[in-house]
Image 1 (cartoon, one colour):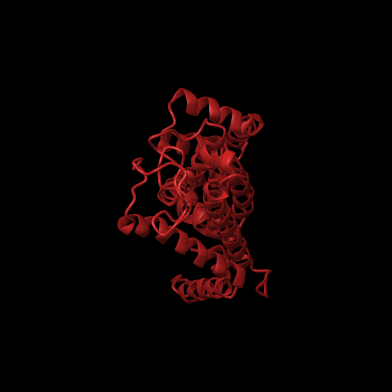
Image 2: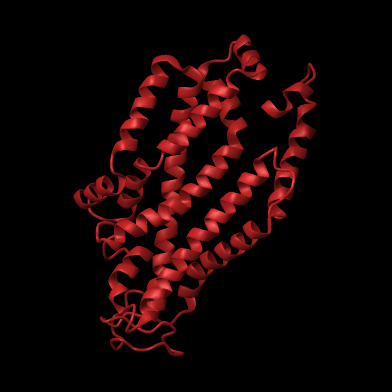
Length: 301
């Protein structure tokens, strides 16, 4: 049952389905008309496909260090080679794979934690709300980069360790937004009807509240991906993120930033991809926010 369709329900409850479907089509139509978001989606898909497909056919592996040092860009090495003889394009492609994997992992974990905690706090209120709110405040006042750097250093810098640590410091904004929306939705008639029918807390939260927050959840999950990409890059750049033999765009940039002036192709290759990924995801998030906003009648270019 949906909050946006509760007024159109009949006794059988079946009349809400066409309206729900039409609402979904309207959201999709508005998103498809958002030119900047669609352009960004194409860019992100192309970057992802390139990172996954090109290494299959590219003659140089990211682990191969048998090439000459500091070879300039050529037909054989499109972005040149590093000081230790590794092909830079292979490094950038591998770094893109890991950066996207880390970002998606962070976004999924942070969204799950934030949505569950926020929905429970907004619906139950009282002691539960106070406890979750104080926990959220506690995590918010902790310097995230410093704490993440310490934890990553202690537990070693494998990509999944970095992802889990970053997720532990990324769920709080999502929880706050979800809590506010859950508090508003919990006063709606369809929630009162669920309570009257004897539905328990778990059913109300997971079957009624959370499905009616899908727009907010989708937008915040998308933006969490972009934030995770930059957070991981910042940690890896200062040497406290992903460690060799794993890699990421932040680590590739960190290893080659000193070549920015003498051999700029070694730095700007990974840097450009990182910027494109971050901007693309942010613009996609803007498009989703406009599409889900019922007050947004005209689509932004």
